[in-house]
Length: 252
Length: 344
Image (cartoon, rainbow over all chains, first blue to last red):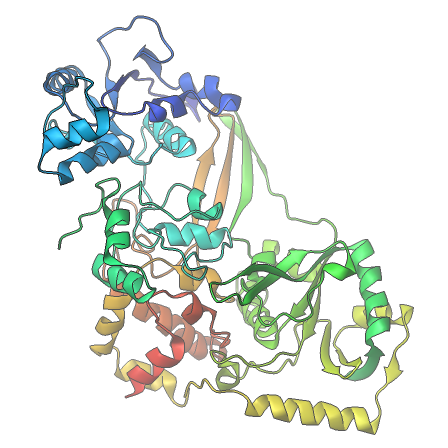
């Protein structure tokens, strides 16, 4: 296929899931209206959710989820050796995500009992983001990832063109939707600190931004904490927002 | 200028005619804030009963009806190595905006200077401006309004009709012959001496009610002198770089263009998106170089465009004193405070 006389790149792609809900991979199969066009941009050769079997000669590997077991460490290292480009796909892969909440507790046995009861479970003491184990070439943020953004990124690969991430916070896109600021409605919101690109989906539906895409390029974190306090939110409420996806550092 | 009075009952009849034949936008209650205070914005109205005449301010400026946040300015159909370009200016049903305050009407006049009367007039803007019938309404100054300081608290032109409430009637200033002709369909009266006196009394009362002030005397020169001032750094430390100020500003017109291609590679378009000078990626160019990497400098240039550059070019400020940017700013950066800190 060509665009304006230039041949398009059609990479061999693979999708892999680690500790996650697999919701980000499911997003790939969403948006049926242009699904076939989207899938035809890549030669998908390994994707458990939509494909039986799978090959190992992929050039681009999309990694969903975080690393919670030793076998996962070996598996992701193995993928890194085989692939040219490794993409951290979704918030868990990029930052550790919800899974990483575990790292806040010192007593792993207590955590296991609290979550799984007496059910035997194999899990490491600490959860790792993908880039804490192997080199990551590109990050796709979001819980789940935003399909239109994924489409634009994959299209950039096909065109051999740089994809420019939005560097500013969600507020800019939220105001474009002419929403009423959630602070004005008395709610806490991570929008002023979080990287835009989601179309401000949560605040547009009356829900606070929970910072799933991680920090914008230059977040004014310390001053925003003061603003949150001034708006009547407790340190605990603010900290919960910061730490939900392990994307924002709480300490200075 | 032609002055008339119209009873509220006859004015409602007039609105009904307008609603029937146009896309009609008027103030409506859209939410309540955390203190249970209602928030109003312009919404499309089908019934006259849906209009909320008790509105105080319109949350988002009317700029969006003329200069949308994003629009495809040109689309392309691509076949093999050739393409066909399509530029479609919007020429649909005429539009009516009811309830614009003087600041917002003046904001459109300022945009006109750049987008209609400038060196490169925008046909996209022009078609919407010509296609929109504007009814302005007088307002009660809020604590954050400083339009009087920048001379935009009265309307000289820029709308078709301007209304001032006098008891059960409206005192009307008729600005366009379209408005004059339209008004022949309903009953209006010539103004009396008593009406004129009441008009003057109300206007005088309004002028006395402004509490927020900005001293713009010699401001262009003072801004030049204070270009290196540390005060900018202090404001920059607070700035969240979120661009909310530009999103709620009635006069911001800076934009970026993106190329969009569909996944079939058969259709493409140039997408124009209004930008904001305080964003970190505002002045980033191909290759990644950023002409304005520092936050406080970006904020400074925002003030220099509004209060210095534009004044030199057009002999008036680009700020209309609506105070929306200060209200939207979570960090509490307001024009009156910034300007006064620079003057000190």
